[in-house]
Image (cartoon, helix red, strand yellow):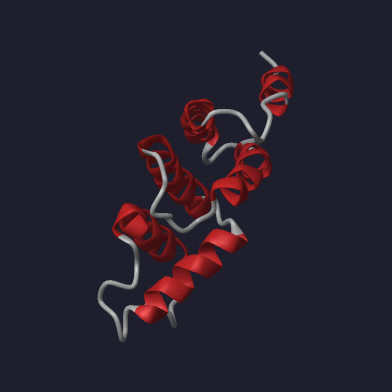
Length: 130
């Protein structure tokens, strides 16, 4: 089947949709992305996933807030992980800032996004950063 139809449906999801809707969508995008990794369509599917998810992460923000619901906390972690592994520039910039801050503050990365930020950094680190 043509993925274009599925992406049209995904495109109809509003930015103000529930975090649960975005969580479901993010997981589906990750699964589809995994199916196409290493194929001629892999880069296109990954780029499309970035286009869909990056604006949603901007809505919730990459940094945890004290009043976040558990749904938002979980969603943020998933989105940071997915966007970071896909090479999203904003997530990678945040990951690099957090890792740099670890030099002086071992608790610099908030616990709810620590694993996702470290994974994003490690996946995309240059030889010099290692």
